[in-house]
Length: 231
Image (cartoon, rainbow, N blue to C red):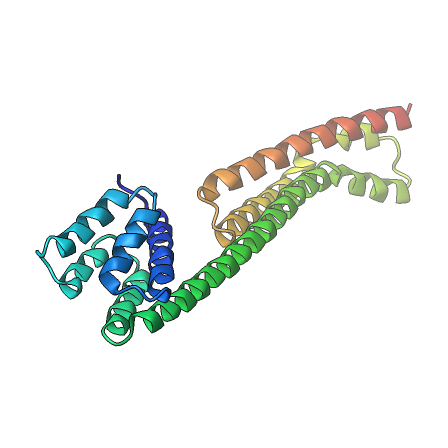
């Protein structure tokens, strides 16, 4: 069975946990390996049995067979751990078991911290995306309200008559619509890149579509209120 790198990493850690427990009980390295393989029931059990059989079949010494464990994983961290265990086994098997137990504990602690940080980053990334989407919607709404500024100016100058006729001239919208639309696209795309979204262009496209949708809705609503207000 072919496992992903992270899955293989976890399986080897599990096997080494059983190995460390057997070493701490005072068993020699060869018997500790055999005990660990018996207790382990994961997907790489057959591969581990094959390695242990090489030792008990007198084909390889423990040191020679130990190199086969390196071939199970590409993880530099596990390879370094296996190297340290190999060196410790040549001195005192029981102390090697204790050292291995501490190393595994530290690795698992680090993994937990990394996972917590990943979750925090995902939460922050989600909040940023929500704010970006809300920003696009707000910019679209502001664009639809552009003529109100023109109306306010005309009211101040007592030019009430031409207000209704000029309220929905499309030329009023273009400068603000284009400017805020570009801002919406750039903000959404930058946000997607920063939060490491897989397809930032699609995210930016979705944001500009939302911008246009809110603009149209805002335009319709302000149109209704404007018409009623001047009846």
